Image (cartoon, rainbow, N blue to C red; front, side):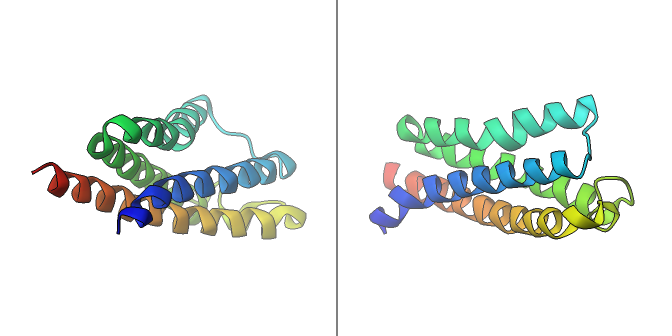
Length: 133
């Protein structure tokens, strides 16, 4: 169990970051820009938030786990709404045809990685609370 905790958070955070990089390439290729507010959310919550939580988890594992879980939850809601619900330029069905496969695949993989991040963050935080008591 302790070994799993050592690699689980880095794996889920770094995997999420890698998928985001690929998704960002699809955004650029398909020429789907983000509004200023959406870009701020992406950079602060979706990209930086999990990395900050991962770094913090070295010294404060409970706080780090909760930050990862919270930022991944925000990312999941943002991606679900913008990629699959709202019929806008960021919707997987409205992206230029030549980029639709990469865009849609990475959007779906982001949802999976974010769900994994929520679960892993909560699991690691709870596990460390039990250790501390």
